[in-house]
Image (cartoon, rainbow, N blue to C red; front, side, top):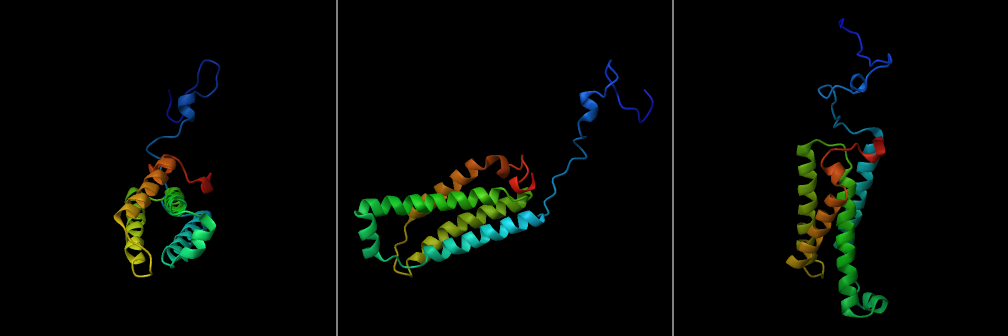
Length: 160
């Protein structure tokens, strides 16, 4: 077959193989697009708001009035912590980053989970290893929920 000619099947149409992009020429661009910059800013803002919420003393009397028993307060708080870390981690997984940057983002989220728990003891809230484990469970759930993005298989939802 002459150079530059597209292979065809018997009907004269281009073969499926000829229409597939060359895997060597396909690259994933780690540079954020304008849309993903807004998304990154939104996730950072969410993280800052979550940090502030974690480091503000809880008015225990108000929480008791709203939620009732200590068990209800416990389960509400742990569910909220786990959910927020899962959401932040899921959203961070949709960023178009290379592997090294993804590891850095994940390490930052884990560090945030531990450090905010540590600093809670200085604002009249309790700090415990159990709470760090609950936060970490939320992070793992966020990675699992967004696994296709954390692995880098799919493009970010904002870029599709």
